[in-house]
Length: 207
Image (cartoon, rainbow, N blue to C red):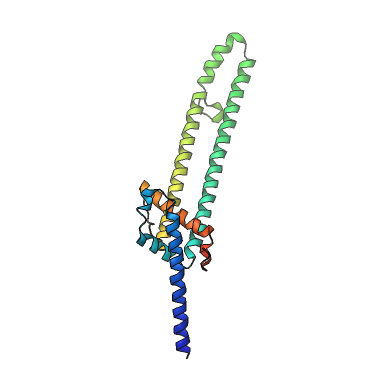
């Protein structure tokens, strides 16, 4: 009797899983129609069916949500770092400008050309003793270095996302830098996000 009940329960669970897979697949097919035709052609029935299978138990929805939260925190941190650097540069420019203006105002007119020439020849002893052109050059170099750091960090986060989703068995995800593949993966993430907004992640067919 217990074996019979177990078989019935297993069959019922299989039917529920099949129904949920069908609902997820139907929802995905509907959402794909909103994408550009070039990407619709790449998202075959098999790809969407495999994606629906990966989404069945709701784990992938949680993974995607976690990855997006990490991405947003990373972007916010990098933005704040760049903002701090810009503020430091603004303060530096103001301090150097004020220093030169004060020196020129205190200088006798016939000595002004000598002072201005000396200010341009200031030795690189500290930030505030750098000549103006050297300061601007150093600011540009620091900004470029920060921008390179931001790009590299974001690239690493994308690779982490690709690897995590590939290991989770999500169709279409693997580590790549190919622009077309990256765009396709972004579209897949958007499909998952929209399904989640519809309540599909609850696992009870709330489509």
